[in-house]
Image (tube, rainbow, N blue to C red; front, side, top):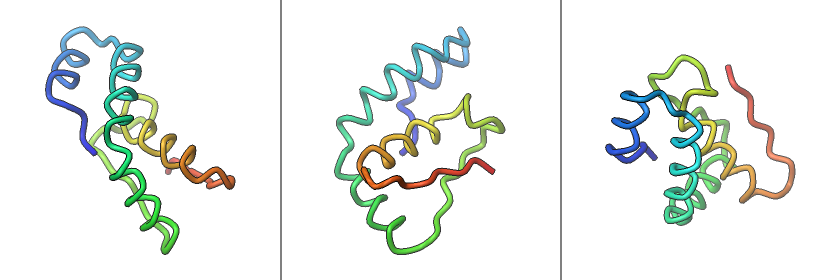
Length: 81
């Protein structure tokens, strides 16, 4: 579920996280099969989405978690640790 290279490079060069979030969210819309697979795994056991970014607000994992939460529709709880 990593971000496409061009998005990573752009956010590294200009720090435009708003653009990154918008574009990565669009990208995820094309990856709904993987979101569904992740949801199935999460439904079966406790899981952790990890990345090298320290802060969740600067990372794609928050966007992925948000899409999984939307897919769930039953109040899935996402906790950033």
